[in-house]
Length: 162
Image (cartoon, rainbow, N blue to C red):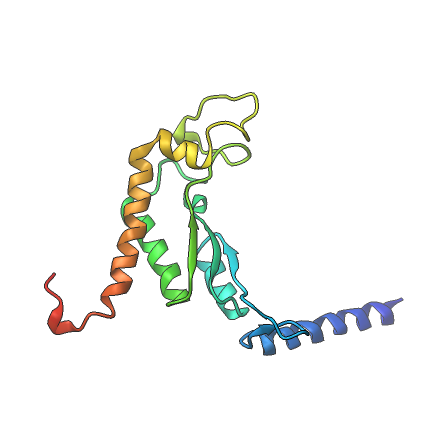
């Protein structure tokens, strides 16, 4: 039984090593179709792991990872720094960002959300963002700031007037 477990463990190790070696290669099906590999991530650490594992972009950046386990909403600077860091890790690769999806199974005390009989159908996601337009605007502004910040890298120094 021990020999069987060791063999299984070695096989898994070999599979992981083979996957790591091919992580930077394009994903192509056996019939020749190219598949884009993107990652669903919830932070800077996951972004780095995704790139190291061969991700070619962000299929979904969960912005709500910034909000739990704290006593107040993240500041504008905190949001900008995280979005910037993720964008830097992925470079020019595509990134889809989801608006704040708190509610249902993801709650934060400082938002003081009302009790709902079925919170999964209530005020969450975009409905929550529209109910709290100031917070939504801050998050959007920080995302736009990252886009402008990234685009600035392509402007020659002698043309920058800011």
